[in-house]
Length: 118
Length: 484
Image (cartoon, rainbow over all chains, first blue to last red; front, side, top):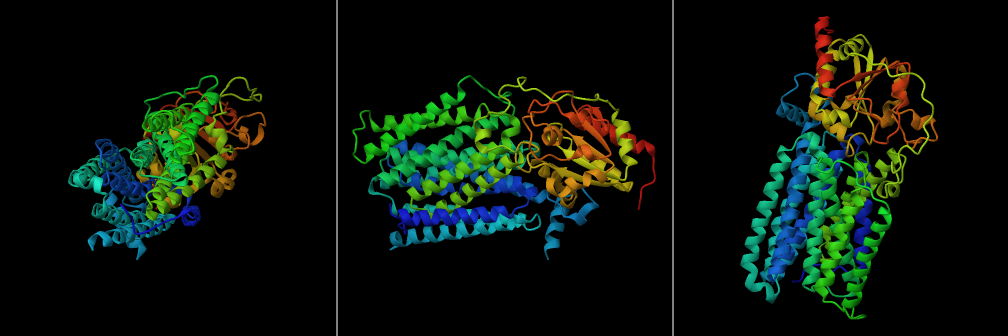
């Protein structure tokens, strides 16, 4: 199998270093109140590993490779789907200050959040 | 034609995914924009996963006959793994969030390790550098998998006590050294420097075995209150493993996403360790609480003064300002809904109520914030340590629910205390302090909390939820008029 991109040693280091800086700077802006959703959100982001799992599974030529590849996709998909589900649920709960009255209905709260953005 | 176009599409999809991930994380810097952030990142993921099936256009000749089966297997694995995790993620209780995040994180580490296993066993990776990167990624991924599973078991109550044996660190060091040695041997054998002696697959299995065992051994001795650091570390580990395997697969989307998460996890790890005034190494190598009782405690003055929940509730109703300090005990008692119900009663009476959250309160970074959000507490009522600590002296009542070490004044004053130097919430400086606690036990650190013996402190014993119910009833029975 070949890919469109050929990343040699030094280019890989460039990518790693720049990505690490981007991660550090972006995450540094997140307030402490959002640390749990941030953690599960970044958890979701590394669920991209499922793409590598699909690559490994599609290129499998022995039963052993198929089995391990299947395992990789299974776990990767679990990582991505689970990470997304919990993050989305948690973020929907963070309530805007004005919505202090009329508690209880979450969809109303979410609607309020959206209304506030505009 | 299609065979040459497919990799370009996969590459472009990866670029789209990586950009959307970064943009999504950027939107997480405010509670208002954060919900759209995760959705943006979700779109990126969907694009990348769909495009990944185009790898089918360029598989090796050896894999050609199996291609249809492999595609079917991939679809089944995606549906099964994704479906099960989605269902669990949608239904899990908010109080169980730390173990759920640990579990999903372990899955990611396991996937990275499995990818490395396919590369290694199929001898698809050649060259010393690529082999070494594969192995390092495999090691980190495998440690993250087994370590996260142990963390999950601890948080879920399957394993109840930290397991510590004599010479733990020597054993851990030995297992680690053996896995590194086997890894080095595999690299050298792959480069043709040495003869493998035993069959290569055997070496590879031994390598993964040692790495998995190391993850278990490393996590077993770590106690509950250190979990915020541990979860952050494993998050960083999985990110790093994914990034490294991304290099092996020549997939920049994996490299970028993995390394961004690696850096994020590292930052959170350092923040958590700083909030406990300990180094990351100190947490991981668990020098904490190893020999409780051998330390001498400062002399304690005063006595524990019990108080009925109803009396405490009424006292707060007549206060003009209250700051609430929630801790893990609130999560255990599932008391967050009742707490907010009580808070609304106080607010209706014109009492100014705020929440003070310590960075390491709970079992993962920010866990208290999520619990309060679930109960419906607006986020402008929740304050972090540095923003509210100066307000305690002007506050009538500090209500501490299920928190202990994070309000222990010994951290400020007692140099012999193991938590000396840890930044704490200055709840003891409030005019009156109520502590809701299940019993007279010590906090996680095994340190006596001098606050509980202070003149201005009263103890309200009982399960947090039950206590709050009694407080609510007492305040309601007053039948006071509600402020406009």
